[in-house]
Image (cartoon, rainbow, N blue to C red; front, top):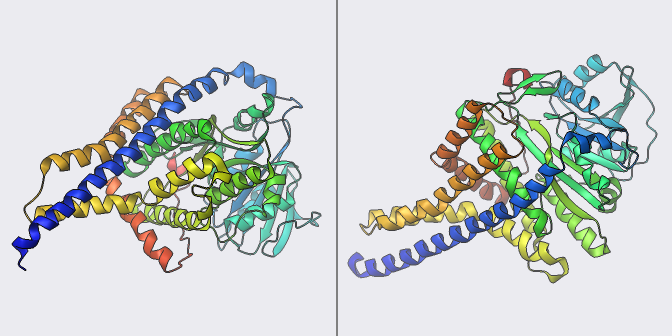
Amino acid sequence: MDFEQVRPLLVQALLWVDHGMIAYFLVLNSFYAILLILAIPEIMEHWRISDDDNLALLRGAEIVPPISVLVPAFNERATIVPSVLSFLTLEYPNHEVVVVNDGSTDDTMESLIAAYELYEAPAAYPDVVPTAAVRGYYRSRVYSKLTCIDKDNGGKGDSLNAGVNAARFPYVLAVDADTLVERDALLRLARPFLLGEPVAAVGATVRVANGSTVVHGIVTEARVDSRWLPGIQTVEYLRAFLFGRLGWNRLGGSLIISGAFGLFSREHLQAVGGYHTASMTEDLDIVIRLHKHLRDSGSPESIQFIPDPVAWTEVPVTLSGLHLQRERWHRGLISTMVQHRGVCFNRRYGRMGFIAYPFFLFGEMLSPVVELAGYLAFGVTLLIGAADMSFALLFLAVSAGFGLLLSLWATVLEEISFRRYPAWRDFVLLLWFSAIEGFGYRQLTLWFRLQSFRKYARKDVLWGEMDREGFERAA
């Protein structure tokens, strides 16, 4: 049988693949559009009650619970001192800061000791959740709110567990050491308590600090970085947080609360055994387990997202740093989806089992494989001279064009609602980066995420270390 005899069958098979790709991306992007539509009334409602008058009611109010801010740190000397200062100076009636040095090999611990005059004290708390060995427990001579734990390396989840053990208050805020939290963010994060809503966890917005001016751990002037890589990531973060996670409020709650900025009930964290130390996406894993715990126990508490409490983080500025981050994120997603596969289409877990989990499994985890299949199928049609340019244009419109529209809408929503970037220059940059994201950057991150499947199959658990410029350089 020669090629000319096989060619019609191959063309027909490729046609079916083409149609499958179109249907997949049409369904996926239509769901993103639904999230956007659901996010609009949510963002308008939060915008309406987020003014300073309502915020003033929370200052000194006894209705808001005391909060322990947990700061895991590994080799964070570039950002640790201003980050901790931003946590210490938060406007909130009653909070403490617990920094956990996770066996850093640089001078993270020495920087903390020097900057905050730490002294070693006896540790007087129960180890409810097992962790790696604690080497020392420190208090500050200048900030009574500050506690520092020095421990053997065990990973971010293990560090958070050590912080949960040492925390004195009923709610804990998990943050990254390279995160700057706006001074009123905790007050805004406490809004559900003011409204009398039972909550087990609250997520909030994380924005890109690169390009902004940072003074004493506070973003004093928010700007969009004009460089290609951090600029496009600014658009990504806007899209993910402003409507991606906000829309889930009306669909039973998102499966992700950012590990860089999320509030949790300490009691519930301990009830599920704390963070899984082997997980590379501990923020996704812990929220899925919390959803399951709340459903199994019949608890009325919910998991919510609030858009206006803002934390700022530094994103990768090199391709190697972006590669490490995105590959690890996707490898962790694969691992978590496989681990909790029993949730999928399980009536016991309601909307999480029938909407949220399938979306993350088929829409987020498998999308790189499906997109690669689409590119390969079109490449084969070119090789055999059966390329359909109308299909190519349709595939581009559905896979990339829809994403462009969503990014533009996220930028417009930001401009008409909270408007953290007041300068017209920044609005124009956001539009520009939205337009060029699909040409080069999208394909790079596709390649980075595809490599995670190979590393997951090899049971690779290495995190890698991202180089940081530091907030002063980012400004």
